[in-house]
Length: 193
Image (cartoon, rainbow, N blue to C red; front, side, top):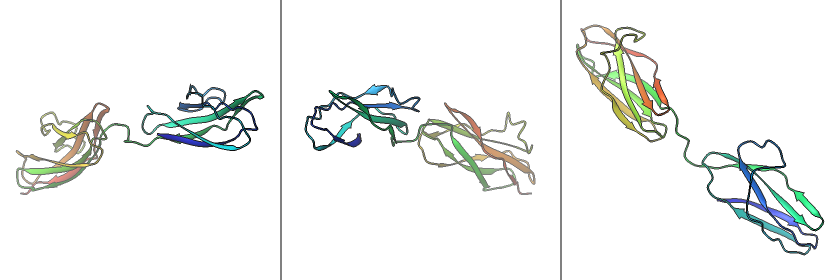
């Protein structure tokens, strides 16, 4: 990763250019933590462009850096600057949404929703019942299925049966990964008479 480009006027004396950098918030300007190898800037009165590369950085993390220059007359500390690395989003809890019911008959229906695994292996299932709060769903869940571990929403569905005719049913989608279990808002439909 190309980190930075700097300009330095050497004033006719040898300059040494260590660049220091650190992840996280700067607590003080005297110590950023880690430093690159020292680089010689030579001597003379010309303005120099210097750059350095560093690796092993975490994705989507803010890093702070500055350049220090040193010669026989002392050390000068540059302004602290920052950059944020790019990369895939950090994994987290799944994002889910129950969307609709289709193929509604007197005793069956198909439930639909979307699951975004958010970068972590995620399973999902639907909970359903006649209670609008879905308080008693012990026997009213679909089988657990795998939504994958991507970072984009995936359309999911499940068929349910053994429903009562002309009855309002409530349902929600549930997703679980290593970051926790999340439940969608509750939707409803009515079976045919």
